[in-house]
Image (cartoon, rainbow, N blue to C red; front, side, top):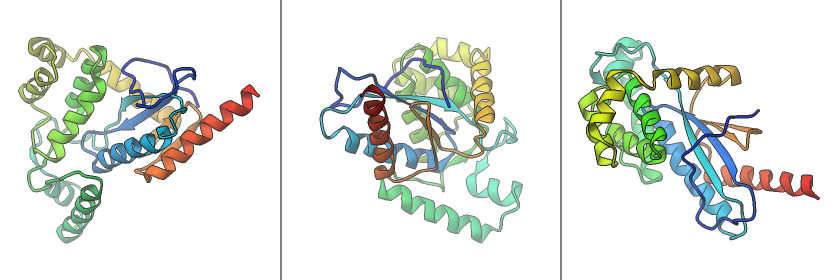
Length: 240
């Protein structure tokens, strides 16, 4: 399994400058609660892996994946309403499921507020992340949009809201509006989704580590640290 190298690397803080970085490609959706949880667990895993001081750097790139691409672009409602009304799940089951996810998110330092979350079609949010990627701020954009969605309850289908967030991150607001209105990065979103299909990815988050190891779901930090250590070991053996 291989992936094309692009920009926006995240470098682990105690990385050895002498080793080639380990690349992690992540498919995720802004509206996926497990993706934000998985992001935090990955970050903790990278910290564990990098603690020795001689570990290689880790570079991260996010890729687009829509869990609910059938959500109408003009749909506005809560996650509870969407799952209960449009997916036909019993209301009690939905509430129990969201309570469980909220508790797990809290354990990794995230304050989910599903009462305020606005379930929307996320394609525009993905386009904004690609806009940020093209301007060197992909990782910052991913974090900011996840927080805006799950913690702040912002409407991430609204171009004005997305443009405000882009400006907050240091982008030119007018340029962000243009990119969103003209669908400048829509083909980039589609390319990510086609790559996910080629890999057989059927759920997110999904992590491709060093083009070789696939990790599905919001695994524990130790799991990510172990896979990163395995990559390093494989490299050492290959270079022996």
